[in-house]
Each structure stands twice: as C-alpha cells, then as structure tokens.
Length: 489
Image (tube, rainbow, N blue to C red):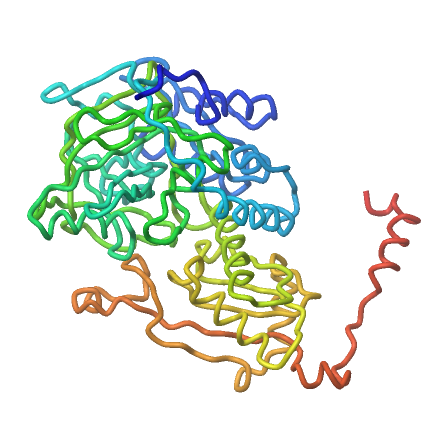
C-alpha cells in the first residue's frame, strides 16, 4: 500500500538550497535574460568554482519561476550534496567518495525506491491538450545552440521491458514545442538500450523526465553504473533513506516525489525530429542538426514556483566538470581495488579532459608490470572506459591533480619508445570529435588510447640506481614552514 503524502526530506531541492545558503553557497541572480545571458553568467561562475546561482524574475514569466546552475561546482556544495565532510584537497575528496561508493555498493539493495501516494511535484498538473512546456522559463545557453534545452540537469527514468530494472540517466533534452521534446542519447547509454527494446517490438517507450530535483539525483543520474543496477537505490543508500516516488498516472513509471518539474510521455518507434546543435561537455559541438528520437509529452507536473536545475556544458571547466571528475576518479580508484590492483595511492581524471579522457593513477610499484596493469585497468574498467584517451601511471611521489608534477614525471620518467602502448578500437561515443561523420554512418564509433608509464623503471627502482629527486624532505619542509610561517601567509 502506498504511504501517505510525504513531508520534506533529504531529497528536497529547497531544503538543500537553504543549507547551501547557510554556507554562503547560494547567490540570487534576478533579471538575467534566458537567451545566452544566463548561460554566459553560469559559464563564468563555473570557471571559478563559485556558489550555486539561483536565477529569478524572467521577463514574461511568473515571479518565482526559477532556474538554478552551479549546484556542485566546488568542494563545499559537492560535500553538502553527498553528505560527506567538505575537504578542499581534491585527493582527500576523491578518497572520501571512493569509500562512499564502496559502502553504497554493499548496501544499495537495502534502499529500493518507495512508492508514496503523492508529493510536492503534484501541486500543479497539465495533461493532454493543456500541456504547454513553453510556460516554463528555459534557457538557450550558447550562441550556436539550436534552441532552448529544458534538460541538462535532467533525470530521465525508463524501465526495462524484460525485467524490473529502472534506469535513471542524464541525457540532453531539447524543447521542440509545447508538447514535444528532442531526446539525444548516445547508443552505448542505458537509456537508449532500454528504449530500443520497446522499438524493436514496435512499441512506444514510456519515459519520465524530472527537470528539477535535489543535486544528488543529478550526480547519480550522470554516474556510470553497470547495466541492471538501479540508480534510485544508490541514491537512497547515499542519503540513508529510500527515495520517495509517485507512480506516474500515465506511464506507471516512478516520479521523484520532490521533483520541481516532471513530465510523462512516450518515445515512439521511428518518430524523429531535427535536434541540436548543442555545445557539449567535450567543449565542442559534437554534431550538427540531425534527426533524433523525440518524446511526446502527455502530462506535466510541477511545484508552486518551480525551480529548473540546469547544468550547461561547454569548454571545460563547465557546470558539471568538477563533480564529474571527482565521481569518475573515485569510481576508477574503486574499480582498481575491486580488480585486485595493490598499491594504488590516488586517481585523478582532469576536468580539462572533459572529466573523461586524461586519467592519471599514482601507485607504489610492487612488482614488474604493475604500472602496465594499473594503466590498462584504469582505461578499460566500466568507470573509465568511455572516451578515455590517455591513461598515465605515475609513482606515489607524484600528485595526479598537479599538472606540474605529472608533466615532470612524463618528461623525466617516460621513454616514449619503451613506455607508451597504443590500444586501438577503444570505447567512445558519437560526441567524440575525432570520430568523423563518415565513420559514424559506417558504425565505426571507436577511438585509440595510450597507456603511458611515467614511472621509474621497476628494475632500476629495485637496484636503487635511478637518480634521487632534488627536493627537500617532507620533514624539513614541515619544520621550515612552522619556523618561518610569517613568510608564507
């Protein structure tokens, strides 16, 4: 039996906003223009790792209809969202998240979503001919974007045709008109795998989309989990309570009860519209206007004075590159642990690589071939495989987040002829700019990647004949900083 109407919970965006405001991490921005200006403001803010921006007072829209960007672009807001201690050091945060993922992996099955009778998302409804998404303020983020994108910080919910698996993913959603949405999903992503099962049987694929919600839903929606794993249960395990959902009156799919804005609809087999272009997380327009599947919206639900959650991508760093790097780095580190690779000290995937393509793993070498093993697994594990291009392994004295350290290791410990292996036909997707339009038409969607050992050769490490590093010892640095602290304020 469904539970009674839920009260504010761990999943309420408005409760998150109040907590963030108390930490000085909310900036109110009244009067910005939806066309380009909001996107430009968000871009400038993301490059400095600023607070979340809450936009309001849009021309020709009701007061209180809002858009939020920058939900987790710095350590403070990311820690608030995940419920971990806020730490300014990137590696400390990655370690905390890796431990969190280990715990959640073990406990997620205890937190299945919980169906409730109603929730704040049901305060207002539009159904059938009443549906008009243009009533919601929707930004056009970049000058070359093909129109307004209502879904950037979106959670898209689909249920597998052949099982009980419910997938929650983040895919781009283009507002085409008052009741039609363009829906680009790369073919390797679970959202497309699920909808194609329906289409192959000539059936429409039901879908729920949430366009405003607690940032925790966004972060897990954009996190790569294995096929068959329910993101909503992982969200519940992180929060320590089950995610309350309302059964959709149209599709029967779960709608997060505390969503700010949600829709139900169907993607019909063979029904497509022109979609894009859109400035993507790679920092490029990954494609021109192309025919893409679309969703017919049958119902819209929204709270009073709803808040749209937006995460405009672009040239990194962008609105979700920081938390993307943290989450993927932690996931790769956890994958290395699960694979039995010892001595892993740290992993960092650079924001500048679109939080995907430049993986640096530091290890304490323990045997011959150790660096090769770590580099290969980092580049091909589930968490690191998509669009990986460089997998660099460094010694434990190298900080993977410090490009001076990494470049020094590449320059002084890597012999290109001996220490770089190139692997061909690795996993990528259609947003990879190196994949040509002609290759996409021929289904040649793959890339190469380099496994780079920027470590001291293991044999010379064992013999102790690699030159010593010319730097002060950590103890000397510590005592000097204490004695001469006034010099380093």
